Length: 118
Image (cartoon, rainbow, N blue to C red; front, side):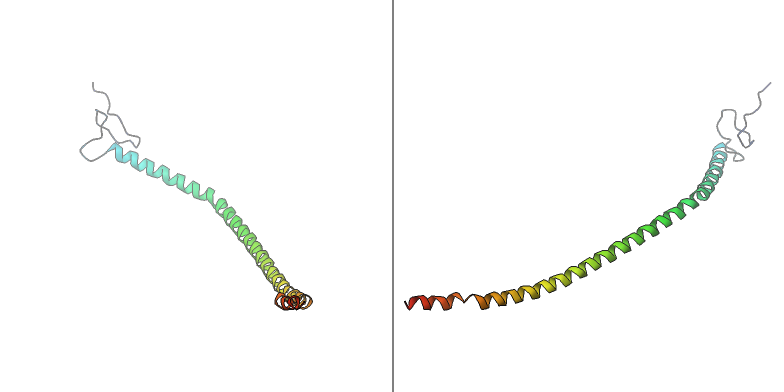
């Protein structure tokens, strides 16, 4: 009596040597590939369903980061404008101080001839 032929997971007969049948009717590697494709398709569908909350969470985090960056940028621009105004005010005050000092202290060139007259 001969032993029954081994069967693939799908129920197709496999050659006695354990190798796929060469006649083309059933090849175990094709069956395995089809099973793997089906398994991966199911895993991908589960990952997509599980990933939907992650996508929403990532979008919320991205929006929060964008809002934070906009606020920080607005604060930096306001600080830069305030500093520019202070620098302009300082420049006018320094110009006034320079004029006042020039009026109080005579120019060195004017002081030299006065000393020679002695």
